[in-house]
Amino acid sequence: MNWMRELAKTESVQNAFTVFLNQYGLSGLEKAMHLYSGMQEEYICRSKTEISKFRVTDIYYLDIKTHTITIHTRHGTYQKYGSLTEEEKRLSPYGFIKCNQSCIVNLGKIRSIRNNDITLINHVRLHMSQHYTPKVLIAFSQYPLSEINDQAV
Image 1 (cartoon, rainbow, N blue to C red):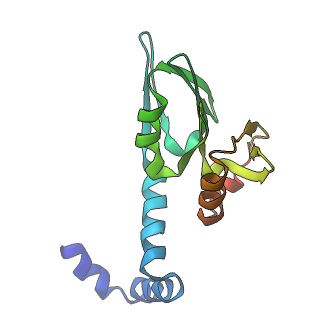
Image 2: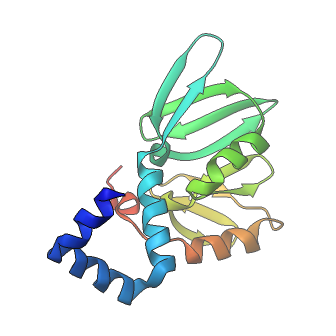
């Protein structure tokens, strides 16, 4: 861990780190690191005839119909065969949550929630079932704002 010793020698970084920890605490640092790593994470979509790769943060939401998962991203839609449960397990560490029986949404792409409708930053509206409403509301209220949410679509 030589990089930690080098980091400790850099006074400006040390001061910024101390200010950050004083303001946000260790849990804030953990959230910031997790958010940053999520921004770097790549998603690979494989179907029988195609393979595509894009950043997890480019995904707005995923929905499923008869084992065909459609992935809606900034750059278009992609399809693959699979299970929404498996996708939820894979993507939940990056701020994705189930909003109804057949849809997982990226919390970082939600602009607002009103009644049972989720409005995304690209103006798409998703229905949120009553069963998932409490979990989505809590997760959205605790999800940190980031530049992802401010990007123009």
